[in-house]
Image (cartoon, rainbow, N blue to C red; front, side, top):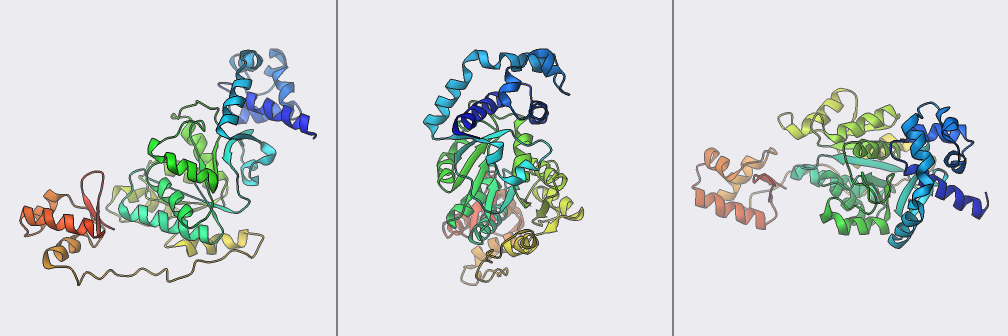
Length: 373
């Protein structure tokens, strides 16, 4: 295909992708029926379009009107100003092409690295343990030559991206909105860093805000682009469980980090493990599982001792040791709960918590409780 025709196809797919009410399955059927010619679809009349299964009155009318709004030139101008580009289906990762509902193109900021991917997902309100493990495993995978994929949401997603970046590795972020909608807003710097060490990707036109429909669509891409999906802390019905379900349906490996049986944020992972997901203690568990799938021998393993080390609290004073003993098993306590389970006076508890937080031994969660780091 020459440069002019490539440009024409890119424009046509971008325009088709913007048609409201027409999803990727219907778009794929249309392209198949019109010999992969997007302009053949856009220039067809309604009766021709309705011959394709799934195309009704509303969809055919929307397709026929797509060219009349002048939307395409404005969209291309905005995307160019952002420094982004629209990828053809031939330019997206091969694993995404295997989906039953592949995207017909992707908006992209940055460059997709040509390397195997592992996705890491989890709750938006993780424990300190969950954040630490997401960051640690992502960092080790990045050091080993794996691109870390997530959705740039708060919590586990953010920790996974940051872990990969801190290791000097590559990471991909799939958004549930247009590329120009940065959510959460505090991730603006992360959004910029990912563009320089991978790519920010979206199936949705610029200006599209996330909603109940876009997040599952995003999740299927997070699952589909990777060799496997690691879930770190998820409630039974969390969005991460949807991603894990997509991964299983797509034939990808589902990994889960075990958690405490009495914590709500562990229940999704425990269910996955009960149902046959691969238990993960560290990055080596993932690398061992995916190594046979790779067609090259350059995959490296992280250096250093990955075993869990028991923390030494012997240098702490008596009050600090009492507090840390309560947190040793992974529990989180509020100030009032410490007052109930220790013999310490409230002023002692407050000052001890402050000192432990300054030393980096504990962190205060968003719900006001304290947890060991």
